[in-house]
Image (cartoon, rainbow over all chains, first blue to last red; front, side, top):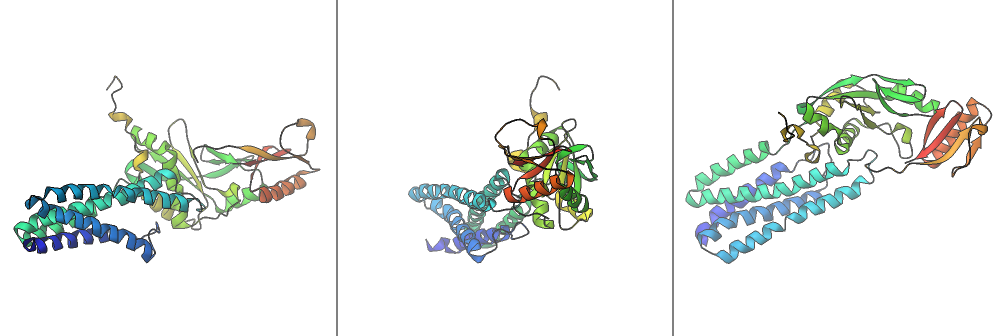
Length: 292
Length: 63
């Protein structure tokens, strides 16, 4: 077994490094505490180890070990469940909620990262068994693949963001010509006129019209603005709750938000970098509906 | 967010003759100022949204 020691260690090393590079703490604020990081790093370490010992096990024709490794890999499905549950619980206390589809996307990402780590470990060890240097090169290549190939589409790929005009007709609040809601109190209307920003998100094609209509996608947009730019809101202030409404005619989305920062350029940049949720992506144009 | 159950928790009005029965208490007020003030107080108490039906009537809606 000693002949494999170096290659297995290399596999574990590169696998662990790839988990480290994937563990980002940014404005999404999760995980931030060392406790949260430890959970993911140790999971990543186990995943890297499983990936790394797979190659030697096959080469030694130790099929029992290979089968057990396969079994161990399925345990990582639990990661997704764990993440989903935690995030869903935390979400109950958010002023502007993430929304279940967004959480599902995050949980999916957490699970798939472990498989990527496992795969990195596997590939690195596979090459390192032949030559340590080859293994190092394979490991570094995998790191780049992991880092740059694991991100989805952003809102700017599917839609244009422009500023909308906020105005009232009687008690009814409009952003451009899209109805948002009815505001009964004069005082709330004043606050809204002072503080609110209207945004129009125009889908770029037929597919993105359907994607943007997804309620989870809209909630994700509102959540992003609220986390990055703050919100002028408290619990029990339903009049100031940010909302996203849709123009039924052409599928444009009107957002009504009360951010702490009213600078539209910032809002635009934040919105353009909202991820397009996996569960919201629809491709009706790809479907066969009897005409071209 | 997907499913919303909306109920009217209270009604504030200047024209009680336009209203009839129902599950929500009705607050009758004298003028525009009292209408806004009562509606605001109720909004804070009930954590509900005040929405204007017309200039005489505001309903408080809980979602």
